[in-house]
Length: 451
Image (tube, rainbow, N blue to C red):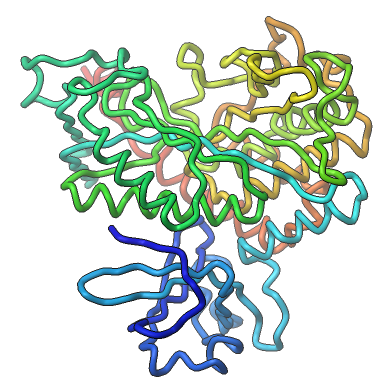
C-alpha cells in the first residue's frame, strides 16, 4: 500500500475519492474522475443517499458530501493516483448535518471552547487487534460456528507445532512474533500519510497486536483512527491476512481494547496536572469523575462499548476494567493515571473502551462526560471511585441492553453535540443488534443444557 500526503497539486491525479463515515464509524467512498472533479464540484460537493449510511430516514435522505481538502491524501494503486478526502455532510439547504459523525465531534470541540474550560482536547489512541491467516464463520437455523487460524499456534493445523502459548505474547520478538512485517508496513504507511505513531508491539494474546498512535487534536484523532484501521486492513489483505478489531474474537484469551490517553489544553498548557491525588488538578479529578459517573450509568458505555461483543471482553481477569475506578499505574482501573510521568505531566487514560465504537461519537461523548464532571465540580474520591476494591454499586452495567437503558435516562450532558434524533436512532439500531445476538443459542449452551 502506497500513501502520501497531498501537496495541493492536482496534476497526475486520476480519481478523487470522497470518504464519508457511516453511523458505525466505517469509511465509505465514491470516486470521481479527475475530469469531473472541478473546483465547483469540490466546493459544492455531491449528493448521496444518507439512509444507506444509517443516520437518515428514507423520506429525508438526500444529503451532500463536501470534501475537506485539508484532510486529503494520495494513494497510488493499480497504476492510478487516487486523491482521497474525508467529507463533511450538509443538508440540501446547506446546513451541516448534525447527526454526521464529523459534525458531532466538531460540536463537542465547540462546546469545550464555549465553556471556557479549554481550547482543545489532545488524545492518544491505542489500537489493539487480532490477526489471522484464516477466518470462517456461519450462522443458520441448524448450525453456528466460527473458526480462526494463526501461525502463532491457533487452529488445528498448528495444534502440535512449536508455538508461543495463547497468553504469552507480550512484547515477543521474531521468530515467535510472526506479524512484525505487517506492523512495520502499516506503521510506515501511517507515517507517510501523516498519522502520528508512538510505537507498535506484540500484545498478550497469540496473534494479538497493538499500534499506539501519538497525541493529536481530538477532531483529527478521529480521522487518524479511521485511517489507521483502513490501512491495517489493506496491508493485511496484501499479505494474505485478516485483521479484526472485535473486542473478544476468541474464548478464554485476552480481549482487545481501544484505550484513550487524554488531556485538555488551555492557553497552550494542560489543565490536568496539579497538587491533588495522583498529581491531578481539581479539574483533572472532576473530569475523571465525569467519565466514571456517566460510564457507571451505562450512558458513556453505549458509545465506548457499543457491541454485544464488547461485554465478552469486560470480564475480570483480563486487564479489562469492569468498575468505576481510577488509580495510578493500574491496568485494572477504568481510568489509569500513568505512573511513569513526571511532576506536572499528569494525564488520564480511559481503558474500558474498544474499537467497535464509532470513534467520532465516542471521543465526543467522552469529552462531554468529562466537561460535565468539571462543570458540576464532581469529586471522584468522595464518590468512592478511588477505592482499591470498589463496592458492587460501582460495577458497570454488563450488557448492551443495560447500557442502552442507561443512555435513555442519562443523556442531557450529550445535548451540546448529539441531536436527540441521533440518540434515538443509535438506541434503536443497537437494540436490534442486541436482540439478534441474545436471541440465538451458542455452543456453550449446548454443552451445559443439551441432554
